[in-house]
Length: 271
Image (tube, rainbow, N blue to C red; front, side):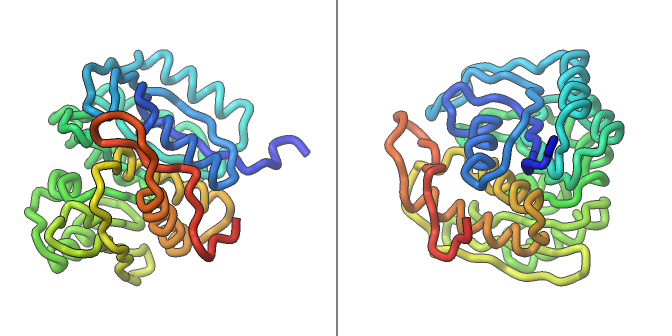
């Protein structure tokens, strides 16, 4: 019976405000009925108003966290979030190559909702060249996709072109989130699968500032569903529905960009 419970891993930074980062990841994975472990690579002083400060974790402790998890747990899928700087990205890449941690979802977190940069400018190149080729699934928003591809993305056709460019960098499956296209009445994400199949998933846009942690929550839900045995397309579709429910059924926390309601359920969910 040892290690039969489905286990996942989040590799990211903390959020002292509880709405994003490792905190959102673990809440999401718990709600999706998988057990989540964590490798903390940075600690932030953060709330719904913004990020006041953060500090990367030393490589030695990152390495030791990976070793501890890998020596005892059976991780079926993992995800990365905030990776802070070049040294942290390189440490994470080294450990992802060293250990079998299942399917990898990369959420290339670069800027917090309040505008604080969570990935240094020089680390973007390291993510592009070293981390992306390891990714089974990549989930950038539009600004992140622009940084990674070096192209401007202002239309659906450009989202499609960007997804192809990201696949050319070694990513198997790409999900580009369209939430930053605020002129649209719907939030439409474009997905390009390893098989060549592509499709859009859309949901009505909700007028609220309580969207802190949406990217973390989406990538965590996808990771959990993959760990449970779902294929990539199914995992993405469930992730979109879950995030929509967490926004639509909001909670009142903080004075700024409030967190999602991770307790939310949605119609048709089998869990």
